[in-house]
Amino acid sequence: MSLRRRAHENHAGTVPGSPRSPQSVNSASSLPSTPRNRVSIGVYRSPASTPSLSASVPFDWEAARAHAAPPYGTPLQRKARKSMVPVTPKTPRKALVRKKSLWQRMQDLPSSIAFHLSMFPQNLPLPSAKTSSRLIAGTMHFTHFLLRVGQYRHASYLDDIYVEEDDTWIDWSTLFTLILIVAAFGNAAYLFSRTRKYHFHRKQEMMSSPNAKFVSKEWDQLRAPTKALWKRGLSVAWRLFVMTWRFLLNLSPPQTLVSPNSNSSKVQELEVWTPGDLELQLFSLYSPVHAFLWLATNGSNWIMMLISMGLLTITLNLLIFTYKTLVRDKEFIAAEVMNEYNEGFVYPRMNPIRHDVGVMTHESEIVNVW
Image 1 (cartoon, one colour):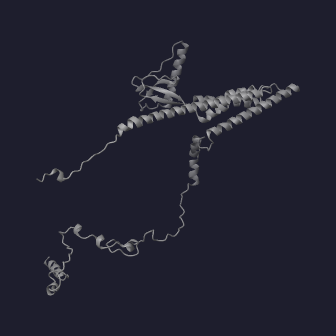
Image 2 (image 1 turned 30 degrees about the vertical axis):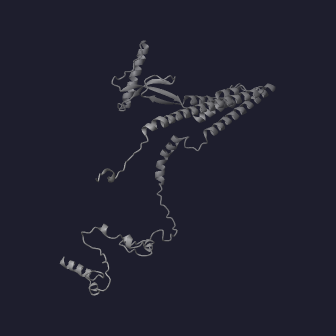
């Protein structure tokens, strides 16, 4: 420690401008100079008291551009920056994709077929509902028109020339007519039978709707385990035997026993009609009424029948379009009412605008120096 202190003192004596240097002693006639401040390396000094590197060392742009080594203690970069190195186009490496073997594809074939069948016809790139309904209805009208023309020509031919034929009441034209009528009724039945059920758990009063009713809702999700198949067969056989003897003896059928500990509750159920766009458009273009109007069409009234079918189609389309517009307008009105309620009442009270005000003072305002 003493050697280090002595070395510091000797070094301080050799610094020009120092009071201990021989130059300052010998040159007494020279003008006095301010001694140069030297940086102490003592441990008791804080690094914050030393002069900043930015004040003495200018910014080295050459080092920043990686053209020269920096003068500070940052380790040298072994690799140059990507922005400074010219990028050479490389051929992209072809990805290696592991393909399934023939045996694996054969094993997955049944599950793939079942999956596509379950997604049918949603997995097909079908046109829109409006276009599909027009194509189907146009095809059915054209088919019915050809059937009626063929039947009318056949009937006129039999009236002009007597031809003895087999007395058959059904032929290919009658079969196709029945298919068209059944298709029209099937579409109408499917259209009016599409419903969706909603359960109102907090609604106690009965809603004024013919589709609302109270049903039993099972809350207990842990059901009893399923009995074996032979046990269920014996139970059904015994029940049928008992019901047969009760019927022969003119007795009332046995009532189903309900467990008193069943965790059930009455909730209100609303069955809402949800028509599909395809079925609704097809019903307006080819309904069962259209099919029966085609049956009544002949050579003398075909103009009136075509006008009647056109007016029926226009009436159904106008009615459907007007009612859809009414439902959409009601949805817009309800949404705007809720939006105005939120903007005018809910949001101002949930998120009120507040001002944080602070006062800044000085000690000269509150300290009495007198």
